[in-house]
Image (cartoon, rainbow, N blue to C red; front, side, top):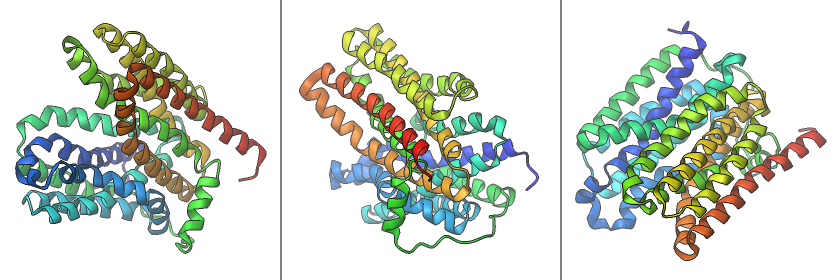
Length: 386
């Protein structure tokens, strides 16, 4: 199967990304159902079952990029998929809380490896003319997975969902094991002095730029998807909840891909942030008006969808080698998880204390920060040898 066309391999890697996103989504969908089994531990303990997968990425994201560069992307993603399959199968037994939590920590490592290897291998495999489409497709894996789970979840039992996910991950592990090209042989980067290697990544205007711009996106996007629907008038609530992620994906895969063929990814990230600002200001102006909130929500989600795709496209645009792309993808995973973890509680507190103006002004500031970060890093790339 190693003669598959490059874009077929890209599609298989994207399917692996769907499995990785489902490592979050399956617990979110089953949250209320799992309360019957683990609710006695308290809401914080139950929430930890969801969030600990992201916390692994927050702590070890950059380290994962270094490890992938060391052991090889094919070996890493196949092992991660196999581990993910084993953990889902184990979770179908509904084990005691400590064992469930331990399985989620292993699943966090599996998830992290997949989201580091996916964009790294896609950037290497996709033909140059198709790379914008391939990287944007990869960036859609979370939104697509949550849309699928929202349709399937209400009809699935916990055991069925866990076992179905296990079979899916195991099948992809086998398919990718026989279809991906062998890992390249060459000099293996040392893992000594991890602190110094982290500093090297975050001081580099090429390695760190995609992640630094992406952090502002994850801080805003997940929080907005969580906070806006309950604040929207009831007649428009379902429309904004279902429509925002779909608009984000559609704009990213259509307008975003077209624009990536005409301008650098970094510039498109900046353009996306600039386009999101009117959406946030529109929410402030029309807060409490269903049609106005839907319009503002759709505008900002489409604009942030462009930021999402272009941020992943910036990884290969700014970094030419596979090890550098793996390190940049690890930083994206790390700072992306930082934004996801902190965005919702911070913006929820601002919304509660300062109302819609606090949300809109803070979001506008973060959009401006995303633009400024890329401008500073671009200047650094132009003035130093990196």
